[in-house]
Length: 504
Image 1 (cartoon, rainbow, N blue to C red):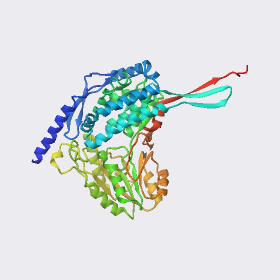
Image 2 (cartoon, rainbow, N blue to C red; image 1 turned 180 degrees about the vertical axis):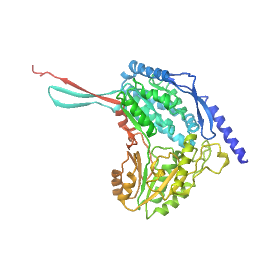
Image 3 (cartoon, rainbow, N blue to C red; image 1 turned 30 degrees about the vertical axis):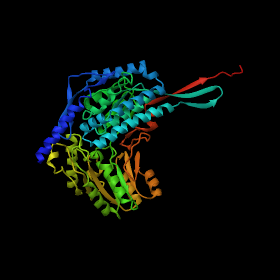
Image 4 (cartoon, rainbow, N blue to C red; image 1 turned 120 degrees about the horizontal axis):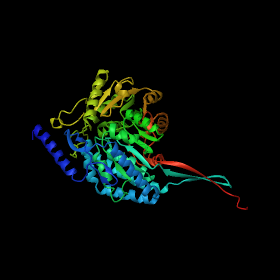
């Protein structure tokens, strides 16, 4: 089969997959338990063949208003008075329904984002596990009785906000939707969620599978652009709490919009996360962590370990091994099981990553591997970038300071522990960090000294629903996941009950 025939085969395979996938998902905003139609539409595109999968409605302010009203009606009618055990049961049933459609959701996720099937499946499984986790922990939530004196019974109640607004990104659409929805619903809120315009399909199908399990109006999804639909949602006066995952710039706008009505926000924003490789590290483990940390999901990860800081004694050997590891990735059609790296999700992100690679070259960094599109002509329609690594990098370079959001690694060296920590913290971000060492003492010292909300030791990940997730500095405010996330979706009420002397 010639290269041109292979390219045509990929294109035909994806077109057929689009047709099959769209047989199961209703395309449109999900409001009060049903799909609504809207005239203006915007395409979600397949990044492998750069063709539209389907046109998705772009919701206007009236549609957002309708969704918020439906959420409040559901909250006041039923959900706000539901018990933790009832919410737990319904969330568990929803997770079961999603599990029954795992293959379907995996295919939607892969088509919309360009993720290899194995990665898409693990992320949908992660979304289901997140919902199950919150179905469990909500049953253990309690208030607090505060002892004061015999004439005063003082206690606290944790109450939901009512209706919350949530905005999720295009890089992990199914998983991010579960991160937002599960703790919000477990806490007793109703939700209006806006998925990314670039990857809304798995989220739409997930909430459609809640039909008959969650009461109508408890979960609502509005589709469209962030600049219009998303802005209407986060600025809405009846949205009592906002949770956003995305870029730092947009996060600042969300915070300003919420501040106008004193609405609390949770923001999970960008990162420029270091991996510090100490001289006693197991090099195979360190290389795997650095490769997984920047090449997984084609580097489109908020907590990508995109800055490797390696002790000077092992720098050259590390680079040699990392280059070899980078060349092992198989770029290809994500629908093929052999593919280990797919394309970038959007044309805009592809252009951004290519520009950063050129910037790295012009700044004087040494390109060790990759740096362009793959030679395979059958991949010419897609937004593919080779696994790329630079050495001779210093912290003043843009490629070392700015979030690239692509498969681009930078490698720097250090001499002392103090220098490593200084380099690791020399960034405006603080979402994640990695440590590679065989020393228990060094693990705990570095974990304490590095300014990051998440620290991975001798590996990249895993991310579990039990562990709070969020950043320091300009990487955000608040936490997703863990029991802490439920608290972000509840407000504390303190009750003072004055008691008479029982002897009177």
